[in-house]
Image (cartoon, rainbow, N blue to C red; front, side, top):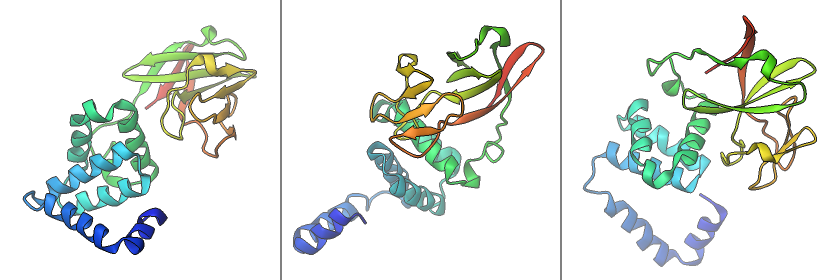
Length: 208
């Protein structure tokens, strides 16, 4: 419970008791699994990381599968939007929940060819869209790296126009990243998500 919510419970106990009773009664006609899936969607909409983890675990305990949770999020796409859904999946993957691994869901990651290695110039950053994913490809001192285009803070897309002097700055909250290492140099702590990559037969390949 947040500090603010704890404060309201103590400051206005009658009002908050009625509020929690309303929430409990509002879902009383739903089976536990359905109620939990709806709760997961509300936490994704609010982008509440702690609440998301809590209610995903509850949904799993109530009989929902990882595939059903993902389907619920995708069905809520008109309300959530892709950025929030991707944020939620990132939270679940970083939490290391085995139910959401590609192997558990029956899918396997694979190598994707992003283009000829010679087209990615030294000190440059190139945006590539492939297989439903946008990535940023950089070459620094001959080494090629492939990063996700979204800021790890709130999954805000970072445009190439945000690149200046070897630094990439998120337009929403100012998190700044070093394009050589992907490390966050100011504004936050988490680095850009980096994909495994390699150069093979003259092409750049990334694994997801």
